[in-house]
Length: 130
Image (cartoon, rainbow, N blue to C red):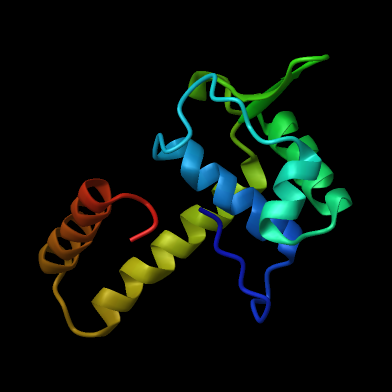
């Protein structure tokens, strides 16, 4: 379910967030699925409960999940997800840099565009994690 890389440059907190986002966006965790409690998830993935709590708070702030007092934490409707402008700008820059690499390798614009579209289509078919 979760993939945590202790050697990654990303913090455990960021990896927990990324794992949950991926599962939500690929419908492994569909709308209104109840998430494990902070304690349950921290035991499952061998992470400090404070780390899981911090990740849940951030995911709630971004609109991926919501909490109902006394009932638990649930997957929110994807339509309510807030686009973080800084993350968006970083992703846009990274995408642009990757596309430029195709051009710098000597591909003409149309070949580079078609290759990018093939990659996008493969990701769509296989899912985000592939």
